[in-house]
Every structure is written in structure tokens, then in C-alpha cells.
Image (cartoon, rainbow, N blue to C red; front, top):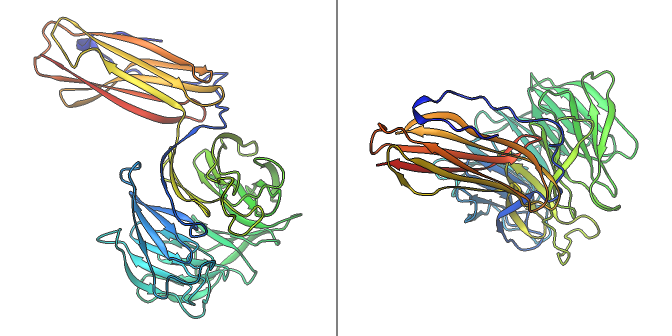
Length: 457
């Protein structure tokens, strides 16, 4: 659908896109912005801090990477006290941030975790504290306000004074691998005992809400949906699945779905929910992105395999390759790979072209715009293209010129010419701004935005 209007008489248009036949089915719907190559077996988990990527670097410590220009990252490796340690050590395997402080796990020197202040210079953070006794080794950690949660010990620390963490209690005495806390609820991965859910609204007195064991459990990590009605777990074992659990009632927790990538023998590692998208790191199968708008029935819409067939395989067998993921937003994703370093990826298969025939036009003539979008994925893709008038002389506007949604075959494009009449009395020197948006129609992901400016003179 194309709408042609005079610049002197525009009215807002609300555009809704949808309908049948637009479900995205791409299995190769990502592009690489940059790859930070690191020595084999020197990369652990990954997290974000504004425009910085935080990378756990195992025996080396950790790294801060400036990715404000995603295609030209700049890295600085930080060596906590006692680091580097021996090659092959777990060392600093996990890393998190609360927006100011950086929390780094320690499995080598007995400190449990290090706390760094990222202000005023995130590239050169300052060590301000560590845990120590009773912790000696932390594999994973989570920060929630002024409380730091650790696994495998399930400890709760008051870190309101980052220079002097105070041990409070344990969430549970059971052995665990991972813990996350959202909305005062702790989700604890209990390996072959399944998982537990705990009320930590009072972190000094955690209270068990649910405990779930299941056949062949090797629960490595988990993440709930935004409405907290469903939970995704990973079983880090050969042919382990992503399992989907209905947790709307803690009294009756039921498995309602599953997902498995690649050939038999694969191993899944971590999951993270971002709205209606699930990001899955799957060792040798790479990063997988799933549409979870219907949580019991996850559908893969994209993947990027970071693991090279010639890679070392740090632990041997299937335990090699893609390790951690941090969705910067719905389209920009940071990923770590044990064998190959860190990656900045973009979730997009739609290539947009938006231009004007001339950067200037005279009153009483026409602004001639060309707009097109193309499916660069390997499979048919439900896609959309939208063009708007977005500003006149610096005044922001949102007026629809074009709203198009269709299924594009691999390599297929949709092209449009948009003539925009300019009134004879239009003021000279005023710039007119247009914006084009393209992306995936279902789930709705804006993957590319371009702007065009034409000056009337």
C-alpha cells in the first residue's frame, strides 16, 4: 500500500501489520558486526554495561570491550589480584553488572568474586572489594540491587557497601550451578536435582516456593518469561533439551514444551529471555534465537554458529564453542565462544535501500524517493517495510508514506517509488526528513532504520 499526500495537508496514520503467512522461518537470520579473537580456552561468559561488553576471560581475568562502534571494538583485559592463573583454570568464568559495578566470579584464588567500580572510566575499572570467607569458589553469580547471589554456594551477600561485602545466608543448602533473581524470586538450577524457586523478598530469610525434579535432569541455567508464567531450563548433557515449564502455579509445575537444535549428541548451555525472544547458546550448534510468543511452542527464527570445526574443544567431546549470550537489545547481541573469543551480532536478514533522487528540490516540484527491502536470509521470511515523513525543519513528525508487509523468498526484494509533492509556497531552506524501517514481521523486530533528508531551496 502506498499513500501519496501533500506536505501541506498531512494527518497522522497508525499502521498495523500482520495477517497470515508472515511468520518468520529463517534459520540463518543474523549478521556479524565484529569478532574479538581470543586464544582458545580463554573465554567464559559475557554481559553488558551500556556501550561496553564485559567478557569473563577465565585464567586471564576479564575484559572490557568498547562496542560503541560495533564494527570496531576496543578491548582492555583486566587482571584481578593473583591473575593470570594457570591455563585451563576456570578462573573468572562469570561476569555481571548493575550499571555501575562489575562483579566477576573467581574459582582460582579463593576470593569467590571481585567487585570493580566502572566509574568514571569503564575501560579501566577500579577494584573495590571481594568476597572471601566463607566463599572460596564461585562459578556463577547474580546482582540484584544491594544483594549479590552466588552459585555453587547459594550464598546471599549484602553489598550495599561494595568495599565490605557481608555474608547473610544461603538460599538453599542443595548443590546448585546457577542462580538468577527477578522480582524478588530466585530461580536456582540444581543440576541432577532439577530446579528450585524461592522467595527472596527478604534476602535474609529465603523461602522455598517450589522444587521440581525430573527425569534426566542436569539443570544448568534457567530464565522465566516476562509474565513469570513459564520457565525455560537447559540440561547441560548430551542430547539435553531446552525444556519449557508452566510455573503459573507453584503447586503444580508441568513441562509443556521443549526445543533441541542440531544433530543428536549436541549440548545446550545457557538461555536468556528478552520479551518474546529466547536466546540460546548451544555449544557446537552456536547461538539460536527462538520466537516464544507462544512459549510452549518455541520456533527458531535465527542462528549464528560461532564454533569452527577446527577449534580446540576446551573440555573435549561436545563441550566446546558457544558459551554465553547478552542481548544488548532485540537486534544487537553479544556472544562468547570458549574457543574463538567474543562476537557482536545483529539479528537481521532484511537489507534496506532508501534514497532521494536529489538532495534538494524547488517549491512546486516533487521529492522523488526510492525505497526497497530485500530478504538476505536462506529461507522465506515474513518481512515488512515502512517509510515515514519524520520531520520538517527540525520538528519531529510521524506520517506514514508506505506500509508494506509480505513473505519474501530468499534474495527477493520489494521496491517502491514515492513521489512527494512540495507545495509552491513551501518555505525555502527548510529540510524535510524521511525515515525508512524494515524488519521481521513476526515476531515484530525492527532490524534496520535509515534516514533521508531533502532541502527545499
